[in-house]
Every structure is written in structure tokens, then in C-alpha cells.
Image 1 (tube, rainbow, N blue to C red):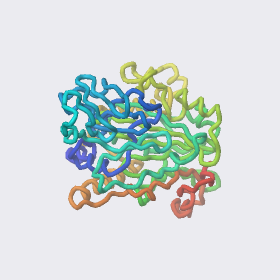
Image 2 (image 1 turned 180 degrees about the vertical axis):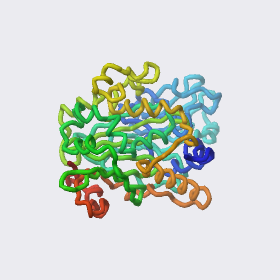
Image 3 (image 1 turned 135 degrees about the horizontal axis):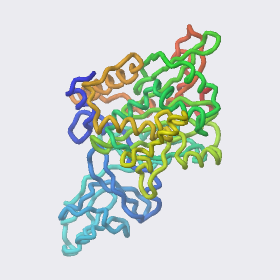
Length: 428
């Protein structure tokens, strides 16, 4: 269990909090590129790390991310007009460029210098892959852009989605590094989901209900190894990288695409889950892409025009007790993403970790909490740059392999967990 003050330290990410300042050291997803599809399109409200912001794409294709509220009277710029290289407040016509600089106040004389002294808080917004990334920290400490493999493969090799999860970011992340629940919660999907079924490794998940966990240090975070028994006295290893603060990469299954997540705090009670599937050596097939768009695999079917899942807490996630009895879905909830979300949201907006009872299978979660705490306090007390900021730390892969009992999973898989362009992923 965690002390209450430590639980609060790890879950609170607003401005000025230790964990909030930690997140502000990294490039993090702010939107999908599809949300700003063309020049002068409608602006988009963005809330991350408890800051209310507005994003827009101007007449010249430049992206901007700034304070949502006009400096004049505080009206929301979501109602603004995106035109002629800037976003104009609909209330009194004040206009801002993508840096947040006020460039026009219609009520002021032509020779007025008033605008020069009006600037909204703003942050960079850059497109890499299907995601628009931002850095909310000190510009003097801004790292080089991210180098995760999935954002650098060709567009034909990747599919990216996002959904709103109504829980704190940490309990969502902890599900991403917990391999033991797959045997139970996702057992139906291993047999029927088109993006999972047919892989040889599925049988190891089903046949061994007591995985052994070994956690190894990585430059940017951790490698969480889950070991299950395989034939001929060997072990089946599923190796999950966690790169700080909130990147996880799920081990592959057969020749199916590899999938992963970013868990980005909206505020202390909600988070965005950015999810992707990619294959390092081939395009996604039409059937794979269609399945992802339909909410299979780790993606969700969302309410049209929103990123809220169709299955949500207001409708009990469309739980089907008959499907649960038949064994189609272990929990009665359809879809891997919503199976996870339903249980993580059931814990409450911020789970009370003073009441939990952890076991050895939770060693990855325990180590991740320790590493987050240490990094947040080292940043606060000594200004120490945390792991995962360096783009070199991003060049990792997950892996699923069968090894002889005597082999160390990380030593045997040193090449397999390193992202190398054009090289197939290690899978079974």
C-alpha cells in the first residue's frame, strides 16, 4: 500500500505539483493531427495537466497552442474566428497569432503599441506522425523531439486513435504494465479478437495462470518481463517497456501489429489514452485497419464527433451478462480497451492506494511508482533531468519470445528490445 501523501504526489499533475512539473519536462501528445485537418479550420479546446488551452492551425499551416481565454475580458477563444493568419476573439475582435502574441486590437489607434505588450501563455505544437506534440515546460530545457518508432514508420504501417478515460492517469498507466490480468480479463479476446487471435503465444497466457515477474532497469524507465511456462522446460517471456512518464508498448502476438499507449493527464480525475498499432516491416492490411477503426484490438468505438467511447460508465459499458456466462467476454464487457477502462474507472477517479494489497505479480507497478517518485523529487529538489527525456531513450521495442530456463530475458533479448528500422519484431 502507499501512504496517502505519496499517492497524492504521484496522481496530482497540475501546475506547480512535483508530478506536474515532471510531465512538463517531456514532449507529450496534445491532439491527434486529424483534429486540425486543414488551414483555418475550427479551433479545438485542449485540456492537459489541468491547463485549459486552445489549439488552432492558421492560414499558413502553422500550429498554435495557447491559453484558451482572451486577455481582454476572458472570453473563450473557442468561439473565435480563425482567419488571415490568426485567431480573432468573437467578443471584441482581439486577434492572436500562433505564438499567443496579440497582433490586433480594433479599438486601438493604428499607431498604438498596445498589442506588443499583450501575449497569452503559449506552447509549441508540432506534428510528428499522426500526433500533435507539445512541451509545457521551460523552453530553455526543451528536449529534442520524440523518437518513438511508431511515429516514424510510413503512414501505411500505423494507425493511431485516442479516447477519453474517466480516471486518473496513474491507474490507467498501471494497467498498461500489468501483464497478469491478460490471462483473465482479456481471455475471450485472445480467442476471438481479429488483432490477437491465432498467435502461438496466446496458449502460454491461457495455460499458465501464475506468471513470474522480473523487472529490469532501462535508460528511460523499465523493462517489465512476465515469464510463463512453455514446452520442453522453456519459458515464454513477454517484455513490456515503460518509458517515463507514460509510454507503454505491449508485447506482440504473432505477425499482428504491435500496439501501445500514451496516458496523458487531462486533470487529476481524467486522462487521454493515445493508442496506436504499427508494424515495423510491412503496411497494415485493409482488414487490420478496418478492425482497428471498428474498435477491435486496443482501440475503442467512440461516440461520433467525440473521443468518448460508446461504451462508458453512463451505460455500464454495455455489459452483457449472457456473453459473460458463455465465456465470450470474461467480464461481460466487449473490447480490450473498454475492458481495461471499465475496471480502472470502477476504482473511482483516483484510487485510494492506502487500501490496496499488492503481490509479487505487481512488481512492475511497484518499481514504476518508485521511479516516478524518485524522479519527481530529484527534479524538484536538485533540478535533475528525469529519465525518458533524451530521445535516445525512446528507441525501444516490446518482445515476446521463448527462451531456455537458464537465460536472462534482458541479456538474451538485448537486440530484440532495441528499435531498428527494417528489422522484424521479436514475436511468437
